[in-house]
Length: 364
Ligand SMILES: *Cc1c(COP(=O)(O)O)cnc(C)c1O
Image (cartoon, rainbow, N blue to C red):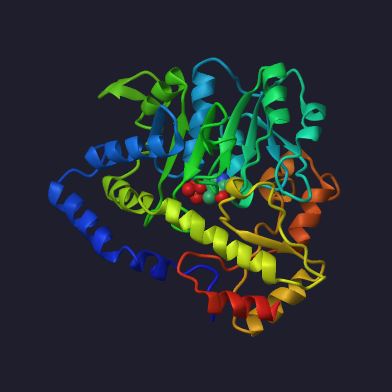
């Protein structure tokens, strides 16, 4: 079976260094908020080109904490609206609704699968306070039109950079373009820990300060709580693993691009729609997603022929039971719904060889 993702093989490449990192943390006797986290925060801030990177427990918390901090700082309040793509992963939406903000869905562009900037203004009301743009599948989703709309309507631009570590737009790295960004280091992400981990990046000092307290019970000083915070910390052991893996992310991105280019050049089936790349540097290929009206037949055929594929994502957020109270129905976001029915993701992970890529391609 060709696995969709083989974490065992991915992490085996760094076995020695990861074990040394784990031993270092075990022997140190210090497991939270220590030197490994501090080093990772500096390294990741440098990688993204921002002033602040703050380690948190996971990617969902990174996004939740950004909105929570904006509320604490007075820039948003309960009931305000946040625009989010209708085809995103549920976590983007949870980060909004968990703060009692209202998610307002906007359709993606049906070629890039990212927010369609030409549809943003129609969704803006007097309650709109932010756009949460998602760099879905690893492709940058920001364009000048989006930035102009944010400036014109005084909206915060928050990036969901969970899938886009190192993607570039105008020489800026994903997570440094908007006002703040949430990153995930879930094991299967392009930069993956060996457990849960996440980070917020920003150049906004008051925001960074507020999140620093919010992730730690709402406290800067032990036993003095200025906010009703969370416990959302990035463990030393995960930070130590991330310090190892961050060293290889640039190489990994180049390898992912090579593999994606192989698929782009070799998949010739006219029943398949290949992903559209706006700019090579803007895409880091977290997922290689193709489309076909015969998706379910293709998935079964691939599986029967030893190739594991996945669907990202089969049910759009507005049709999830969790959001039934928002009152949406099938047909409200036809592009997002069509994508959910036709998308299928192919195996693409660092360590896959050309022979494997050829098997996948041949089966398609
Ligand atoms: C993975 C992911 C998240 C959430 O990250 P976790 O670390 O799993 O909480 C958020 N948004 C998107 C687009 C993701 O892919």
